[in-house]
Amino acid sequence: DGGITQSPKYLFRKEGQNVTLSCEQNLNHDAMYWYRQDPGQGLRLIYYSQIVNDFQKGDIAEGYSVSREKKESFPLTVTSAQKNPTAFYLCASRAASTDTQYFGPGTRLTVL
Amino acid sequence: KQEVTQIPAALSVPEGENLVLNCSFTDSAIYNLQWFRQDPGKGLTSLLLIQSSQREQTSGRLNASLDKSSGRSTLYIAASQPGDSATYLCAVRTLSGGSYIPTFGRGTSLIVHP
Image 1: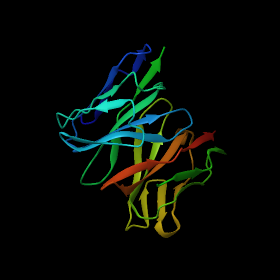
Image 2: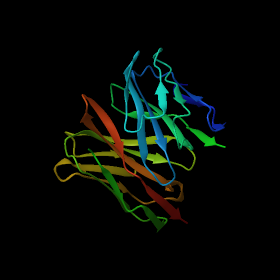
Image 3: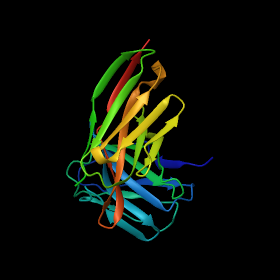
């Protein structure tokens, strides 16, 4: 069963802690994306990767970091430098053949 | 910088109505436009993708049109059903810094009541 998995579904963080959100895909897609969604808002692009070992900043990269060591995996770290990290985080990949983006189920991060 | 606007922000209709959701964008030099559906607390599900060279795409009761020159797309839902209740988002891919980057609208929240 092909798709995108994100874990955990819910994550709680204390102020000053770094946390890492997992994103794994078995769709054999080269391109992967991380978005942030706040209530009543559209999705805002944090980072994207077109190919393994390469990634680019999106519109709101400050306070976040990523890695792309394997095609299947694109983890996102929310650092203590991110001042307002409470949000819903969505990972996506894009099929090169159809240009369609596919999304994971999301991780809801709450800072306590 | 590309900006995407979706109107209306919310819509409530009785079951069976045909309805139109609107998406407008400021930079007409897009690569493609994609419509998504999002249920509360869930990820996005792709509905339709229109390449910049295309005028429309259809899937079942859904029809999406694209007028690139005027910076507009519409999603037409025929014979709406309560199961269509969700938030509908559009996203355009535009060239930025050497890559085609997606920009999303804020979505239209649709309620179809029996």
